[in-house]
Length: 242
Image (cartoon, rainbow, N blue to C red):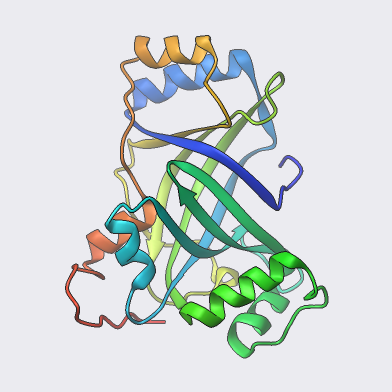
Protein backbone atom coordinates (compact mmCIF):
# COMPACT_ATOMS: atom_id res chain seq x y z
CA UNK A 1 0.00 0.00 0.00
CA UNK A 2 1.29 3.47 -0.76
CA UNK A 3 2.30 5.73 2.11
CA UNK A 4 -0.74 6.46 4.24
CA UNK A 5 -1.93 10.06 4.24
CA UNK A 6 -3.71 11.33 7.32
CA UNK A 7 -5.20 14.55 5.92
CA UNK A 8 -6.31 14.94 2.30
CA UNK A 9 -9.01 16.24 -0.05
CA UNK A 10 -10.19 15.10 -3.47
CA UNK A 11 -13.20 14.37 -5.64
CA UNK A 12 -14.45 10.79 -5.88
CA UNK A 13 -16.42 9.52 -8.88
CA UNK A 14 -18.10 6.10 -8.69
CA UNK A 15 -19.09 3.67 -11.42
CA UNK A 16 -20.82 0.28 -11.28
CA UNK A 17 -19.29 -2.11 -13.81
CA UNK A 18 -20.32 -5.39 -15.35
CA UNK A 19 -17.58 -8.01 -15.95
CA UNK A 20 -16.83 -6.84 -19.51
CA UNK A 21 -16.54 -3.22 -18.45
CA UNK A 22 -14.37 -4.20 -15.50
CA UNK A 23 -11.93 -6.18 -17.65
CA UNK A 24 -11.74 -3.36 -20.19
CA UNK A 25 -11.17 -0.62 -17.61
CA UNK A 26 -8.67 -2.78 -15.75
CA UNK A 27 -6.61 -3.35 -18.93
CA UNK A 28 -6.58 0.35 -19.79
CA UNK A 29 -5.74 1.37 -16.22
CA UNK A 30 -2.82 -1.08 -16.11
CA UNK A 31 -1.44 0.54 -19.28
CA UNK A 32 -1.29 4.05 -17.82
CA UNK A 33 -0.99 3.52 -14.07
CA UNK A 34 0.93 1.36 -11.59
CA UNK A 35 -0.64 -1.12 -9.19
CA UNK A 36 -0.76 -0.21 -5.54
CA UNK A 37 2.34 -1.52 -3.77
CA UNK A 38 0.25 -4.17 -1.99
CA UNK A 39 -1.63 -5.27 -5.11
CA UNK A 40 -4.98 -6.73 -4.19
CA UNK A 41 -6.07 -6.51 -0.56
CA UNK A 42 -9.12 -6.50 1.69
CA UNK A 43 -10.42 -3.39 3.40
CA UNK A 44 -12.62 -3.68 6.48
CA UNK A 45 -14.65 -0.88 8.03
CA UNK A 46 -16.85 -0.28 11.03
CA UNK A 47 -19.35 2.53 10.46
CA UNK A 48 -20.69 4.46 13.43
CA UNK A 49 -23.89 6.39 14.09
CA UNK A 50 -25.91 7.32 17.14
CA UNK A 51 -29.29 5.92 18.16
CA UNK A 52 -31.07 8.73 16.28
CA UNK A 53 -29.17 7.90 13.09
CA UNK A 54 -28.21 11.54 12.63
CA UNK A 55 -25.28 10.84 10.33
CA UNK A 56 -27.15 8.62 7.87
CA UNK A 57 -30.25 10.84 7.99
CA UNK A 58 -28.14 13.81 7.01
CA UNK A 59 -26.33 11.86 4.29
CA UNK A 60 -29.56 10.63 2.68
CA UNK A 61 -30.84 14.18 2.38
CA UNK A 62 -27.82 14.94 0.11
CA UNK A 63 -26.83 18.20 1.83
CA UNK A 64 -24.01 20.51 0.76
CA UNK A 65 -21.96 19.19 3.70
CA UNK A 66 -22.02 15.76 5.31
CA UNK A 67 -19.72 13.65 7.46
CA UNK A 68 -19.31 10.12 8.74
CA UNK A 69 -17.12 8.23 11.20
CA UNK A 70 -15.51 4.88 10.50
CA UNK A 71 -12.77 2.59 11.74
CA UNK A 72 -10.74 1.20 8.83
CA UNK A 73 -8.34 -1.72 8.63
CA UNK A 74 -6.46 -3.61 5.94
CA UNK A 75 -6.98 -7.32 6.25
CA UNK A 76 -8.09 -8.72 9.60
CA UNK A 77 -6.02 -7.03 12.33
CA UNK A 78 -4.76 -8.42 15.60
CA UNK A 79 -4.57 -6.25 18.71
CA UNK A 80 -1.12 -4.97 17.71
CA UNK A 81 -1.91 -4.22 14.06
CA UNK A 82 -2.66 -0.76 12.71
CA UNK A 83 -6.20 0.53 12.22
CA UNK A 84 -7.35 4.01 11.27
CA UNK A 85 -10.13 6.00 12.89
CA UNK A 86 -11.31 8.66 10.48
CA UNK A 87 -13.87 11.35 9.87
CA UNK A 88 -14.85 11.47 6.22
CA UNK A 89 -16.35 14.78 5.11
CA UNK A 90 -17.90 15.86 1.84
CA UNK A 91 -18.49 19.50 0.92
CA UNK A 92 -19.80 20.47 -2.52
CA UNK A 93 -18.53 17.21 -3.99
CA UNK A 94 -15.03 17.46 -2.52
CA UNK A 95 -14.12 14.69 -0.10
CA UNK A 96 -11.83 15.31 2.86
CA UNK A 97 -10.56 12.89 5.48
CA UNK A 98 -9.08 13.36 8.92
CA UNK A 99 -7.64 10.07 10.12
CA UNK A 100 -5.50 8.84 12.97
CA UNK A 101 -3.52 5.63 13.29
CA UNK A 102 -4.08 3.38 16.30
CA UNK A 103 -3.26 -0.17 17.19
CA UNK A 104 -6.50 -2.15 17.19
CA UNK A 105 -6.23 -2.61 20.94
CA UNK A 106 -5.78 1.13 21.53
CA UNK A 107 -8.64 1.98 19.17
CA UNK A 108 -11.10 -0.24 21.02
CA UNK A 109 -9.84 0.95 24.40
CA UNK A 110 -10.62 4.49 23.26
CA UNK A 111 -13.95 3.74 21.57
CA UNK A 112 -15.30 1.44 24.29
CA UNK A 113 -13.78 2.91 27.45
CA UNK A 114 -12.63 6.44 26.48
CA UNK A 115 -8.98 5.54 27.17
CA UNK A 116 -6.95 8.14 25.29
CA UNK A 117 -4.13 6.82 23.08
CA UNK A 118 -0.48 7.76 23.69
CA UNK A 119 -0.49 10.58 21.09
CA UNK A 120 -3.76 12.16 22.19
CA UNK A 121 -2.32 15.70 22.06
CA UNK A 122 -2.56 15.90 18.27
CA UNK A 123 -5.02 18.14 16.44
CA UNK A 124 -6.57 15.23 14.58
CA UNK A 125 -7.27 13.35 17.81
CA UNK A 126 -8.93 16.45 19.25
CA UNK A 127 -11.19 16.62 16.20
CA UNK A 128 -12.06 12.92 16.51
CA UNK A 129 -12.69 13.27 20.22
CA UNK A 130 -14.97 16.28 19.69
CA UNK A 131 -16.90 14.45 16.97
CA UNK A 132 -17.47 11.44 19.24
CA UNK A 133 -18.39 13.62 22.22
CA UNK A 134 -20.89 15.52 20.08
CA UNK A 135 -22.63 12.66 18.26
CA UNK A 136 -22.04 9.83 20.76
CA UNK A 137 -21.88 7.27 17.95
CA UNK A 138 -21.77 3.50 18.37
CA UNK A 139 -20.84 0.71 15.91
CA UNK A 140 -23.67 0.03 13.47
CA UNK A 141 -22.34 -1.84 10.41
CA UNK A 142 -19.25 -3.81 9.39
CA UNK A 143 -18.43 -3.45 5.68
CA UNK A 144 -15.60 -5.13 3.76
CA UNK A 145 -14.49 -5.48 0.15
CA UNK A 146 -11.61 -6.81 -1.89
CA UNK A 147 -9.76 -3.97 -3.61
CA UNK A 148 -7.40 -3.62 -6.52
CA UNK A 149 -5.85 -0.15 -6.58
CA UNK A 150 -3.80 1.83 -9.07
CA UNK A 151 -1.85 5.08 -8.72
CA UNK A 152 -0.64 7.44 -11.41
CA UNK A 153 3.11 7.83 -11.92
CA UNK A 154 2.53 11.37 -13.23
CA UNK A 155 -0.28 12.75 -11.06
CA UNK A 156 0.29 11.51 -7.52
CA UNK A 157 -3.25 12.48 -6.51
CA UNK A 158 -4.92 10.34 -9.18
CA UNK A 159 -6.03 6.89 -8.05
CA UNK A 160 -8.38 4.30 -9.49
CA UNK A 161 -9.76 1.48 -7.36
CA UNK A 162 -11.85 -1.57 -8.22
CA UNK A 163 -13.88 -3.09 -5.37
CA UNK A 164 -15.40 -6.56 -5.58
CA UNK A 165 -17.09 -8.99 -3.20
CA UNK A 166 -18.58 -6.13 -1.17
CA UNK A 167 -20.03 -7.67 1.98
CA UNK A 168 -21.40 -6.59 5.34
CA UNK A 169 -22.78 -7.68 8.69
CA UNK A 170 -24.75 -5.92 11.42
CA UNK A 171 -23.60 -8.04 14.35
CA UNK A 172 -20.20 -8.93 15.85
CA UNK A 173 -18.97 -5.44 15.01
CA UNK A 174 -15.27 -5.86 15.68
CA UNK A 175 -12.73 -5.67 12.85
CA UNK A 176 -10.59 -8.28 14.63
CA UNK A 177 -13.31 -10.94 14.25
CA UNK A 178 -12.92 -11.67 10.55
CA UNK A 179 -14.14 -10.20 7.26
CA UNK A 180 -17.18 -12.39 6.67
CA UNK A 181 -20.51 -10.92 5.66
CA UNK A 182 -23.48 -11.04 3.32
CA UNK A 183 -22.92 -9.88 -0.24
CA UNK A 184 -24.11 -6.35 -0.90
CA UNK A 185 -23.63 -6.45 -4.69
CA UNK A 186 -24.11 -9.32 -7.10
CA UNK A 187 -20.93 -11.33 -7.64
CA UNK A 188 -20.59 -10.06 -11.21
CA UNK A 189 -20.67 -6.38 -10.23
CA UNK A 190 -17.64 -4.21 -9.57
CA UNK A 191 -17.45 -0.75 -8.05
CA UNK A 192 -14.84 1.50 -9.66
CA UNK A 193 -13.83 4.77 -8.02
CA UNK A 194 -11.76 7.50 -9.64
CA UNK A 195 -10.15 9.74 -7.05
CA UNK A 196 -8.56 12.98 -8.25
CA UNK A 197 -7.86 16.56 -7.24
CA UNK A 198 -8.59 18.00 -10.67
CA UNK A 199 -9.67 16.93 -14.14
CA UNK A 200 -9.04 13.33 -15.16
CA UNK A 201 -6.55 12.68 -17.99
CA UNK A 202 -7.72 12.44 -21.59
CA UNK A 203 -6.96 8.71 -21.87
CA UNK A 204 -9.28 8.02 -18.95
CA UNK A 205 -12.10 10.18 -20.32
CA UNK A 206 -11.85 8.35 -23.65
CA UNK A 207 -11.84 4.96 -21.95
CA UNK A 208 -15.00 5.77 -20.00
CA UNK A 209 -16.73 6.81 -23.20
CA UNK A 210 -15.52 3.84 -25.25
CA UNK A 211 -16.61 1.38 -22.57
CA UNK A 212 -19.93 3.21 -22.01
CA UNK A 213 -19.17 3.60 -18.34
CA UNK A 214 -21.28 6.27 -16.65
CA UNK A 215 -21.17 7.75 -13.13
CA UNK A 216 -23.39 6.15 -10.50
CA UNK A 217 -24.72 7.63 -7.30
CA UNK A 218 -23.76 4.81 -4.96
CA UNK A 219 -22.90 4.67 -1.28
CA UNK A 220 -21.86 1.30 0.13
CA UNK A 221 -23.05 2.11 3.62
CA UNK A 222 -26.23 3.74 2.30
CA UNK A 223 -27.04 0.57 0.36
CA UNK A 224 -26.59 -1.54 3.50
CA UNK A 225 -29.08 0.63 5.38
CA UNK A 226 -31.59 0.34 2.55
CA UNK A 227 -31.11 -3.39 2.02
CA UNK A 228 -31.45 -4.24 5.71
CA UNK A 229 -34.14 -1.60 6.28
CA UNK A 230 -32.08 -0.29 9.17
CA UNK A 231 -33.26 3.21 8.49
CA UNK A 232 -36.55 4.10 6.83
CA UNK A 233 -36.59 7.89 7.02
CA UNK A 234 -39.08 8.09 9.86
CA UNK A 235 -38.46 9.45 13.34
CA UNK A 236 -38.61 6.06 15.02
CA UNK A 237 -35.44 4.76 16.66
CA UNK A 238 -34.14 1.53 15.21
CA UNK A 239 -31.95 -0.71 17.35
CA UNK A 240 -29.21 -2.76 15.72
CA UNK A 241 -27.39 -5.78 17.08
CA UNK A 242 -23.97 -4.70 18.31
